[in-house]
Image 1 (cartoon, helix red, strand yellow):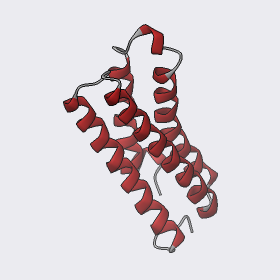
Image 2 (image 1 turned 30 degrees about the vertical axis):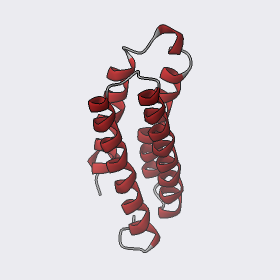
Image 3 (image 1 turned 60 degrees about the horizontal axis):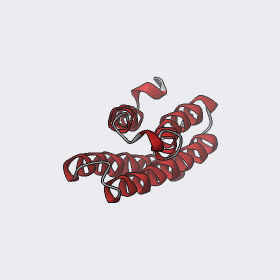
Image 4 (image 1 turned 30 degrees about the horizontal axis):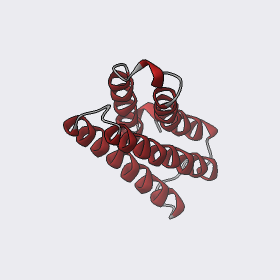
Length: 123
């Protein structure tokens, strides 16, 4: 069966979290406990919810946590957009982060669909 680390969605989410940490390191100091903290928490929430849901060992629990991970990915997407509008990131950086976030969200949607339609299962 493998572990959550074998899931491509988790691997891409981890890449996104690392990118968020790297990019937010250059944000203004006044954002340290605001937008920077929130973006990092959202990115961590995606990878953590995938891992926790997988660790629960039931399809129902995994699906629930995948929904939560997708919600956090959507939250992060909004924060990335705000960062662009505040000019904390360039258009190029925004495009890269936005594309990563969209990819993760689509992967999570696919996993949710596959679990809800019994195409994948712990059984």
